[in-house]
Length: 365
Image (cartoon, rainbow, N blue to C red; front, side):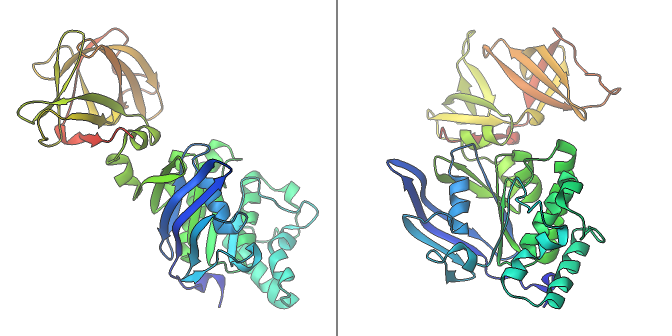
């Protein structure tokens, strides 16, 4: 069976995983299921537990409690080389004194595969990662993206049950990182391989993963499809970690229809996506791209003034001062003028508003 014909398995299961270093809990009672053929990204800030989780799957760390299963088999006590895993690191970890072909075939040689069979596998992988004819080249003669392809080929050639990706694109520049996101994702989908990605890059996680698991404090706060996590965050942390979000605090009005926020000029009523229990305290999140600006003062919305304007290629980012709230908000508007221009200028009076359904109620966590 070739690598490309590899069958989709049952996937990766982590159940009740806990890991502490002294009195510090790095991972707390973590549950995670990566379905066969699925790519799940562990996303979070430094120290959130994502790398420790990956290392426990790889066998480099042992959980204090809980279990790790691959395709239904308990592997928590197996050494790394017996777990049938492929791993891609940020720094590639290629052997500089070995050719591309030797790097790719290293695991096969260690497993005792005959040279003829090994060469066939290596050539298959060279075709897969678009490095045909480069087998005799040394890594130092390759670009960063090509070196990462070799590292990926080396991990895939052994037919791993699960592919682990540890910040795999962190060493690449922005344009190359974006192209490699497509390449790795496309390859993972063609092979139907189960994969776990660790990253602190929100764009990388959103671009590559079937599901994103946002972690903090050793726990998964929310997991779901990228669009669902972004559009419907459950907590303040998730809303703010997955991009900019305007957060409003207040109490629900007596009729349950709006959020009453305090301001220097008195209470301000803000849209709620749906009726809520009167009098309770709530947090409301609204993404900058969901907000609308109109020039001058309008009968509905919040009177505001432009205090910052930045051109960002396909959209403009505005910093908007809202006197009624005594604070500044962020608004993104799709570019619709000449390259490098912004629709609104500093000091301009505008009205700020958003559709009620574009707000999301989040927890304070």
